Length: 192
DNA sequence: GGGCCGATTGTT
DNA sequence: ACAATCGGCCCG
Image (cartoon, rainbow, N blue to C red; front, side, top):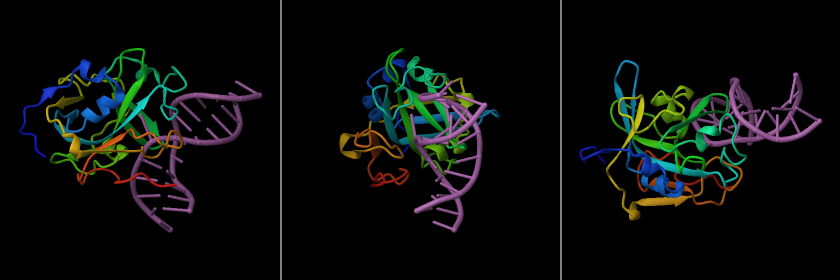
């Protein structure tokens, strides 16, 4: 996979759609991170998961809280949360404002000099994404974090499975990844 | 204020 | 298989 194709900036409209659609369509899009010293790190999205307000495993399931308010806010913003006392996970906010939804970005195919971007916490560590970037506008190329679109992964290259690491709604097929991509975090969800 | 648990990862 | 490690959220 390469970046020679024409890339266009993510739009609010792209993210305002159904979370499952956005999760599938974010495959092949590129995440860009500008560091304080102005260097830019980039990686191709190869694995995603959808979370919605009707989904018992979603942080927004029990309504608006200090943390979940980001999920109920406008689409195309970053939702970054802290988990297990040591890790961060990065999501793209979806659905119209006042409807909660997000796509967890689980793995990137790194673009040099990035590495170790397989897994939601590893990719945040590699791209230096912390809660400081919560609610950042992902359609702003002048900001610290944005996404470009351009390559659509054909349906025959997309696999969907159950999600990783959750204890409820374990039967939803809401995880998407690019088949045969070696940077996907795990091939199959852990079996019970 | 207390206690439980988690959208993970690295080590045993 | 399990520990690390702490913020969010529920309960009282």
